[in-house]
Length: 247
Ligand SMILES: NC(=O)c1ccc[n+]([C@@H]2O[C@H](COP(=O)([O-])OP(=O)(O)OC[C@H]3O[C@@H](n4cnc5c(N)ncnc54)[C@H](OP(=O)(O)O)[C@@H]3O)[C@@H](O)[C@H]2O)c1
Image (cartoon, rainbow, N blue to C red; front, top):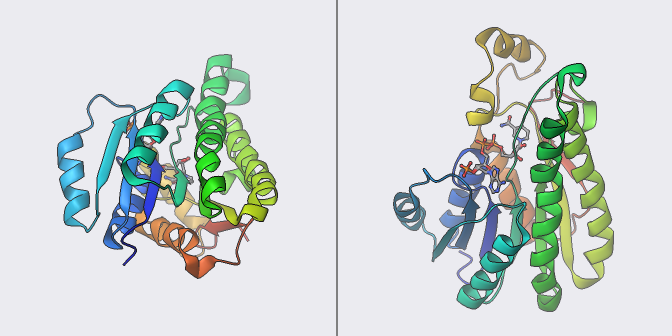
């Protein structure tokens, strides 16, 4: 149990982020989560996290692209918990299209949420981690950030950018004992991939040596390891969770 530790999971209300929050809750962490959707059932998610073992929970509507909203959340988190030990930059979106059809809005918004959002949150949280002289930052990249993917030039660029960002901050922050790693999932069963047509999913399975999509839990297990002291000598790495899809 990690009774006095706190994790901040951006976009932790569903999918991979929720599973990550649940995993840290199992180990007694206090949990901070932000989200954008008005439909979020804050009360039931708070109860679910507490039942899973979370010491305390702070859930707040805050868009990762809006600096003043994140500043408010981080300030309130520090006032409530005193520290943020682990940051998981998970919030992300897709707006897929072929290059020739991709609008400037689709390109900009995906870069803004996935890449700039990661920069904004990390900058605000690492200020406190530097004072603590300890911390672990885990950024959600994707295998397509390494390999590229037709129809996802905006998303792949944002996820490749996250890899460069992660390696740069790993070098900058190492002297303060802050580690930074990227996790690159393959195809994981969440709302993000639920929209794919069945024939596309079947085609994807043929490209995965383990012949199935991954689960959010399988990604959360790796993220928990990277957030914990069990990975104390690992920084600046990009670790794939992809059933062997990209070797
Ligand atoms: N699923 C996959 O196969 C896969 C593969 C590789 C990488 N990833 C990456 O893993 C991460 C999680 O993916 P997922 O599949 O779990 O996604 P998801 O089910 O679509 O959930 C996305 C989460 O991000 C939040 N979010 C979106 N825009 C936000 C914003 N501007 N500010 C704050 N929160 C925001 C959403 O909040 P609301 O509920 O409020 O909208 C939601 O909690 C993403 O970065 C994704 O790119 C996923």
